[in-house]
Length: 151
Image 1 (cartoon, rainbow, N blue to C red):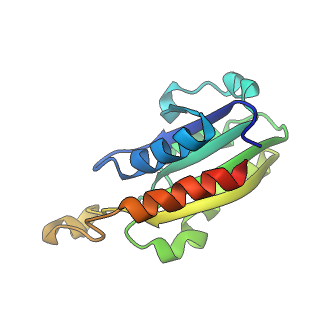
Image 2 (image 1 turned 120 degrees about the horizontal axis):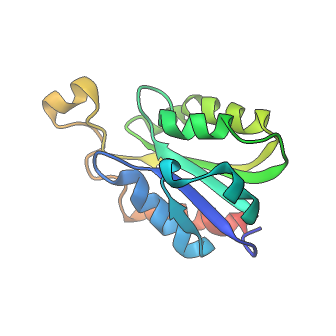
Image 3 (image 1 turned 180 degrees about the horizontal axis):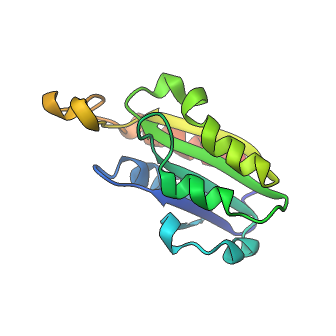
């Protein structure tokens, strides 16, 4: 799949966790990375595969990412979803809003990736957060392997 043009739409704030994962995937896929606010839905026509990722904020991807997905014209396209989270074992739940938004617009979600990420949102900041040392090199290796699997 990655033999064509690939775009990764990545919202990464706070600690840059998700951007590090996006960078690892982009190297494997020779992809361009843009934040959601720099993407116009018309330009997605130029890409054969689009990755959608952010940190998880109160149980879901960034609002800007979900809103962009909901604004897509109804058209088949290939996509993948990724995230970083303080509680990565809940990936199936965290990804559901974005996955549903993409699928409702005709996207085929080819795969999903999640790994731990340093999380200091809300009350977690009071004690330094959780998953402080993530994503680590093992997480980034898994991200690269996931990206290769899309090819």
